[in-house]
Length: 350
Image 1: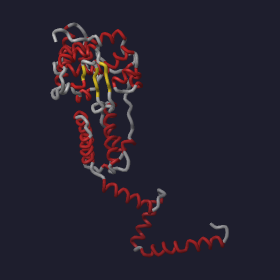
Image 2 (image 1 turned 120 degrees about the vertical axis):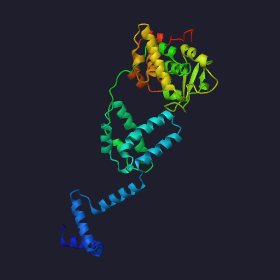
Image 3 (image 1 turned 45 degrees about the horizontal axis):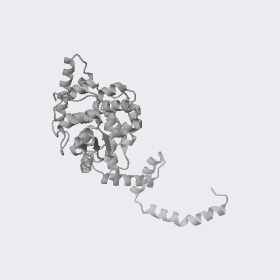
């Protein structure tokens, strides 16, 4: 609509070349092409999308699918990249296991064609604990972010899936009697690594890569280098007297602190023998019989917090935040119990 005939004629004059050009282009279309365009416009009208917008979207989607890869190729590339980054074998085994499980459904699919709703449904149908589902989602988020960075997908579909919140509960810890029985029963090759977890809070994955040259009994300090630490930062831990006593008989100038093979079997045997030794004395062995996750590290954090009362000190030793320490380890044990924990020394018979 125009305010006057003159305004309308002025607009027509300015736009006549463009109108003529489009008119000639339309006349160049075949009858079938014009019919196809009319049908496409009718379909798109419901969505308020132009034919050009639809064509561009299709074009971009097709280009993405052409440069994308199957999920099987994606997971193989990710594992190879993480191996090249120096990730531990334990980490790689967990990564491969979770991606293989997802791949049983999606291996043959193009990564760019896997939708958030499909991933969400798959995670819900796992039928596993909230923690395990969270771990699967974490691995898949890592995988699709890797795909996005490589240009295989336009966006990380996992970011649109539902998050599940695991119920928070106090960490399971051992009693001083239980750790004494565990260390007494453990094979000699395993005692140093168990002691380092129990009395210095060293993570299991860190112990896998820890060498004896980082354990300085003379100075009394243990060094966790950034190359093996989960947080990629250096930690210097002052060793307790009982820890030094457990390490001294086995200390070496070099070599791994923990044996390379048979660790799980040795740990299971130590727990079973330790539990039986306590039962023979008429003492309950709940922690050894039903082993809590990360029991030794959680025990260290709890008893050490009670011992020093300084969250910043313990957080630095454990390699995590003060907030985490306060949220999970405050007031779990008393100072007297902490004294007993760090008073666990090797018996003369060992």
